[in-house]
Length: 124
Image (cartoon, rainbow, N blue to C red; front, top):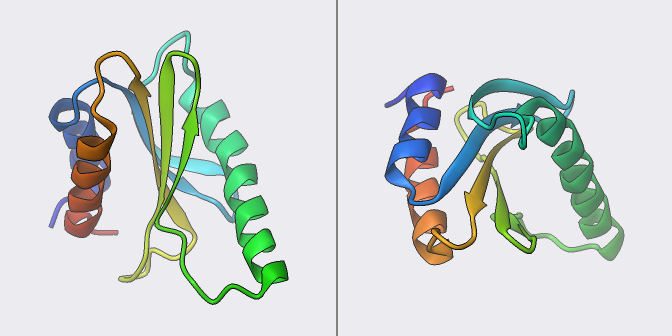
């Protein structure tokens, strides 16, 4: 099992094209840990903004009566992918992993696969 800091660092090193990663509490919108980012990508702002995305999707699923779980949410920009992976189990409800990727360098399928693996090893 890996702690938050180790898991986020692994996301940055193991996933090609990673620009920044965060673990976010979507009940509060606060980042519990961040790595990467920089001037062009403020991970605390991204955490708060993506919290709204997650909340909206959860509400929409409830209104539609869908009895399923969100695995991940993908936002595709001109030059980046933003991947939001909701965590399940082991006291992690209400949390998501956020990963920003350089679209030119990233392999989206591999990034999703690696993020799923990192989630499985994460100890909250």
